[in-house]
Length: 116
Image 1 (cartoon, rainbow, N blue to C red):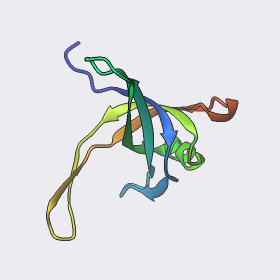
Image 2 (cartoon, rainbow, N blue to C red; image 1 turned 120 degrees about the vertical axis):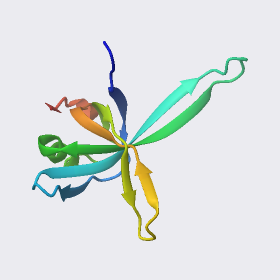
Image 3 (cartoon, helix red, strand yellow; image 1 turned 180 degrees about the horizontal axis):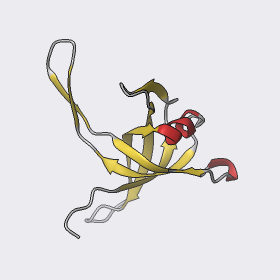
């Protein structure tokens, strides 16, 4: 295998999805996912917790599914990371690095809906 761009996350939805359309008319949804990692430092001691927030972008049917997720719902996301460059209002270059979703599995409340 020469290269691989694949990300798998299990975490909790932290905001209601924002819905929009691409210039070609495809539905998109953007949201954030919180992941939590508990670890023991290499030198020992008490366990520590690290919380990360991930910007998630979904297209098509996955965008529809993302809009049905409520804050706090647990989901599995598989996708790839992309790097997007834009200009802000002051014409400064900005960068975002979303996870573009290819698979989403709802894990909360005993349901297992899958699309992708």
